[in-house]
Length: 309
Image 1: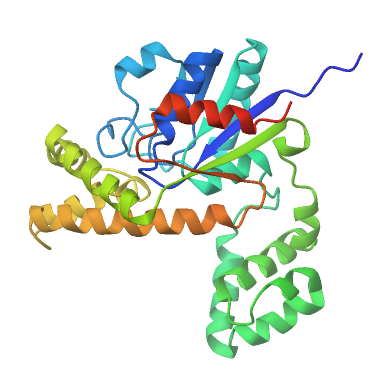
Image 2: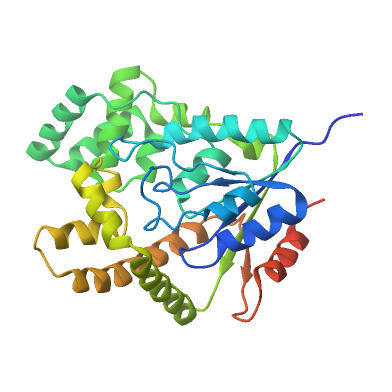
């Protein structure tokens, strides 16, 4: 008898939608382990601003993908993919149920659909192509790309300079079109039973939840946490994290701390909108509208009904 492929639940949605609480309810009920798909929760010391699970939650349910590196390290999606695949395999070996939860769409896509194995950036080649684009225009480079890699050129606008340069770079460095490299991309969607569930709330409710959460973070010590991180130094990636970015600027005199908090609320709302735009492009996600009076355990029961047998 053939063994059934392992199951993976991926719980997505914008920040503030309540994903973490629902994942906790599911994990507790069905002996699950949670894998964070959050590009900022990988950093140690960024506790409050990234809304990491509490120590109580971590004792109740195994959590993975948290506190992987110091904030001075540049952490990449490729590094996350290696870690996550090994973690998911270990959870499966323990016969537990892996629940991937988060709002970093690129991390989730890297696991489900894989990463293109094309050669990494070649700075010298890229610099030469960028100089050429500045001289003759991106449309001329697009014409060259059409001759070398018509499939990729067809997908790119002639003014999409950054992606045109990347496609030409791959071709010049490897001798193979980017479109050929992309056909070698594989992810867990080809090997596991993957179910993606998106949690959605009415915009006004989501915005209210975001504001409440930001103010709770401030009350919990976000400002002090940000000061300590700035003093220790952080990587370019970590410095872009919502909350820290606005407060770092306040500490440097660009605006007041109070204004930084208001900016954080607005930027978090915009970020939530971008997350929704990203996730709604994926037709495989089953969306679950949430009732404001619904408990995480009630939502978890509804999520369970969406899982394929």
